[in-house]
Structure formats: C-alpha cells, structure tokens
Image 1: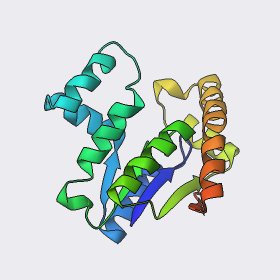
Image 2: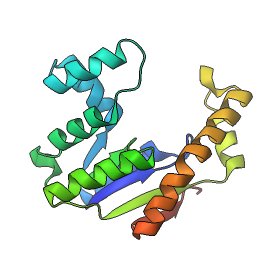
Image 3: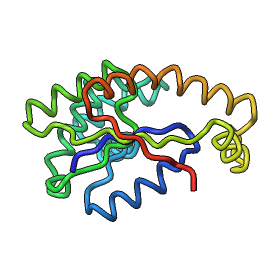
Image 4: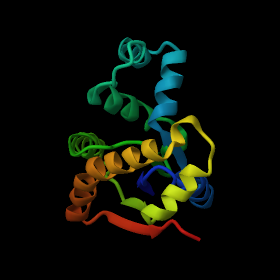
Length: 168
C-alpha cells in the first residue's frame, strides 16, 4: 500500500500515521526526517540539501524527489509506505507521480485527514507552543488551505483521493 497523507496543522496526522503504519505494516516516510537524516549522514543528497537548509531556504523539489526515490529502494518500503509532508504543491505531486511511474510503483491513494477549522483552532491553541498564538494559528490555517486546495483538487481528478474524519 502506497499512501500520501495530507492534513492541516493540528489534525492529528502524527497519531493517525502511527496507526496506519502499524496496522498495514508499512514504512512511515517523513520528508523532514529524511532530509535531516541525509544531512547528518553526509550522503550526496544530504550534502546538496544542506546547502539550502543551512541558509534557511527551501530544498528544491528535484532534491526531495531524489531523496524519496533513494529511500523507496530500502527493504522496509517493499510492502508499502505512508508519505507524510510531501507533496505540498501540484508541481511536487506531478514530479512524484512521474518518478513513481518510472519505478512502476504508482500511489494507491491520497488520504486527507479532515477536521473542522474550529476544532483545529482549539487543538492548536491548547498545545502551548510558541507558534500557537491565535493570529499565527489563523495564518497557518489560511496558508494551508490556499496551498493545499489545488493539490486536493489535483488528486481528486486522479481518482486517488480519500478523506477521513479526523474528529473523535
């Protein structure tokens, strides 16, 4: 089972990802974790990413795609994976789809965790983190909607989109 996992801040993606990975015995691939590990291990991809990360820039899509392609060769990905944190844009989704098609391993589904905005706000405000100021939360949710809606539409058109209620 090959899954892309999408959801807004505060939706409980981490908790749900753990459940899915455990239930289906698939690898949990977090692009953030993968970048940090490649950087720490000084791999070729890690060194390329470090140039951007050390100056606070976003790592270009082609480097992320190379990182994912390399990671998918590991034995724990043979039975499937849950990809968390990528893609975030249509360009990234298209690049991911192209790479997976070249490997002959297309996605099975894109799973969106849906939570009403009021509930997200409550959850985020209750965490006590520095970036959980009400105005910052509002901005994060607006940015998520603006960035993610085109991606959701893209995957809806592809027939891969599935939604799960993230409340309860």
